[in-house]
Image (cartoon, rainbow, N blue to C red):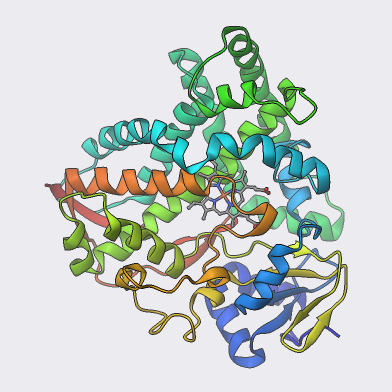
Length: 426
Ligand code: HEM
């Protein structure tokens, strides 16, 4: 017996999730408590959402659970079949082992200069004294950082073409029409709306494969692509060229929009909390900035769901969920639990300073276990350096008094109006 959930038809539940995800989840929490079952269009079985940190720990520490439903179908044409996001079991673990060292926390210092440089150039072009949306600026910044730090493409012509192709692919994956078309096509057996994505991805491979061959011949290099080419699986074999393409596009898809959105939310929260902003005004990159980032990822988790399909039963809130059930932490609900976070809806970076209890599985913006975000250390470095560089260059104010609503954009929760603010010379 799965936990109870809303009785509305899947089409209505999907629409509520797509249009007002927070009020949908909050109303489920009020009506059904810690765990509830929702039904989305295009999925044959319900999905159980949980928010208790103990249940999340159990879910994430069992390595054998499978991928959540839907991930494969929607992402396959974009990231490709060898992507670390899509593989499971021993094949997935082998990729994690090979790809984790390049993303290790201490290595991230190598990319700080690139991040600072990209951000400083972009901020120099922001309007002064008039409102603008900063989310698109942050998308441009995180795309450029990935092209330089991850792909390491230095040839200007190839770099320009790559940027244009990647932008096209990202725009196509973010489109609401595509997502809705995809849900409908699954239900009605309509023509495949993903064909365009496959063509876009093929063009990217045509550009990347020669780059990879040249790079193998040269050796060296500090960017993530060079490190992946130098890395070996346990049997001593390198990653095949086509697979390297899959992993690069994976890193782009997983790391670009997420980090841009997290930066936009952090700026949104800061401009609506002038005391916190003032503490950071000198662009200092210290413990308070880290606390601001932790609090922002808590209060505005960018990725709302990071689930698994159970391979063995899971006990949650008095229910025994059988193998085969789809279960996901409702990250927003976990992050706003009053028993872990006093005044859970208040933005209080101080809660992360000295003596703060470690929240364990009550803070899961990057998921957990063997599928925990591979780029978490990269993302945190990127946010820290980008925020420090921005605040050193400009003074910021909210363009509007009301805080922005949480809107669902592709797989993320993002600021509905794109974080509108006003910048002044510092
Ligand atoms: C603030 C920014 C980011 C957030 C909030 C975020 C969040 C997440 C989440 C929730 C997952 C799923 C984890 C799970 O299922 O347990 C994930 C997976 C992943 N992320 Fe991130 N991410 C961010 C930035 C990045 C960056 C910058 C990169 C790479 C450059 C990256 C690469 C990946 C990859 C490769 C996976 C798949 C891991 C696997 O399946 O083994 N992410 N991320």
